[in-house]
Length: 271
Image (cartoon, rainbow, N blue to C red; front, side, top):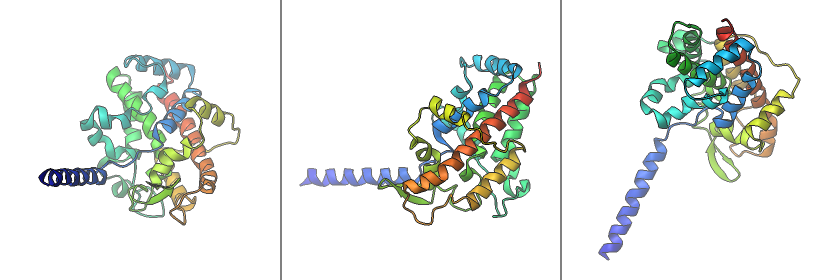
């Protein structure tokens, strides 16, 4: 009887700890590994020769050869460098305080802690060749990641639901969050490798808007969040939702790749 009581007590303790861990788990991050690698590959294909040489030189200082090899570094910090991750976690998104989706830095990016200001800051570090290679390659990794992040609609929303993490839905009978649907499930559901997805998007000839800067890109994401059907009318997802919203996600990947390439060509294209 005593052993049974002890087992039950240990089981209850385990369930309590597990529940606490789930409640405290960090939110899902934008696009997931697949989306970030695709954006990096799209950008790499559009680099000028001078920018490509400088990217390769910087990556070599980290024993890397390709841009997509650092595309998820800023998210991986959660496991590899928790201290740096905590200091930079707010740089992955921007919260608009109004559904008009107009970026107001004092209101929406206090102390420069948001994705819009972070892209500008790391881009400046990357472009300044008086900085050391270690500082510049870290800036490169942040720029590659954050340009993708700002194009994910749920990373620039105005709702108070932690970017859709608190908006619970059911997908294939399982409970998940709307953020995780956009983060991974929507792209993974296409069942394509990074290389195949990149080729598919590169083969599309429909033009995408490629101008503007980080603030405009964030405002675009906010308007898609508001007007693009991102939030479903019911909390049960189906293939119809995926088929309707995936083209929007893919367009944002294409825009992110083109804009990342333009930014890198500007910052690294001069010898």
